[in-house]
Image 1 (cartoon, rainbow, N blue to C red):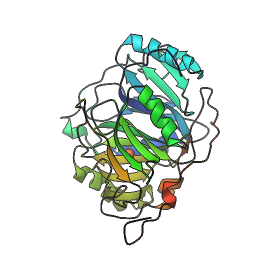
Image 2 (image 1 turned 30 degrees about the vertical axis):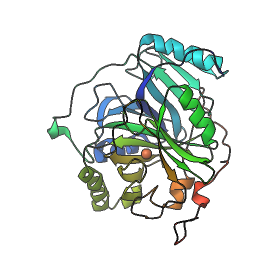
Image 3 (image 1 turned 120 degrees about the vertical axis):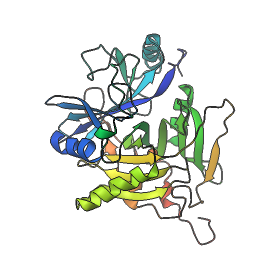
Length: 334
Ligand SMILES: [Fe+2]
């Protein structure tokens, strides 16, 4: 435990991914999916959606291996960056201050940590602003990505992940639980949606996916049609479908390196102070797909490795519970 107050986190702000072929990644994320290129140089690409007024929500960095560089959360004030530094130092985590100009383009003074779950995580307040593109319909392409919505992370100990994010002030919108209320998965938020971060029980630390929002479900369907038309349907891993958890309409894609992205729309408001957690049984086969379609094995088992603050891969531990091993019979019980 740490005695230092937690930083006031506003929202999940961006993910930075290491990719092995930046040109191939640019084509997938910008030309096909429809992210807007805000900044690029020989080694990095900063991307954002149409609704976003900050410099980026996804950063692709040319690297030697495909991995998560870091997840990044925006905090309320500059002082919250200092609070984040003290909070994680108090937990005994590796902590590094990253002044403006030495980290990701567009981002001001930041703190990067390896959190107690083993994930590289950044906290910042100051970031360059960007032009509003919501009505620049002439620039919209592909799935017409509106904004980043959430991170989904694989971690072997869900109660531990829940407790850590609860200590950072996150609320819980939904869970998947066993008969004894053992946690298989949880969805947690700071902004007033279903989540900023979700935990998938599995070998970890690994990045399961980045979730990006569209305004309407036809935009989710459209990118599937575009990929089919290009004979690039191999990028489609799962869906389209409707989640039981979150009610969102979804489609999961894999980028040229295997990084997973969820195209996601139509979840709900969670901002009331007495918002109650909705708890799904792990035996309810509508939890992962409301129409009861089976979840493909790769979705449960495959994920991106994560790096430490020096760019080395973090060691991975196996899960304590395996949701994919829960089989649902004709009576709806595992
Ligand atoms: Fe998701």
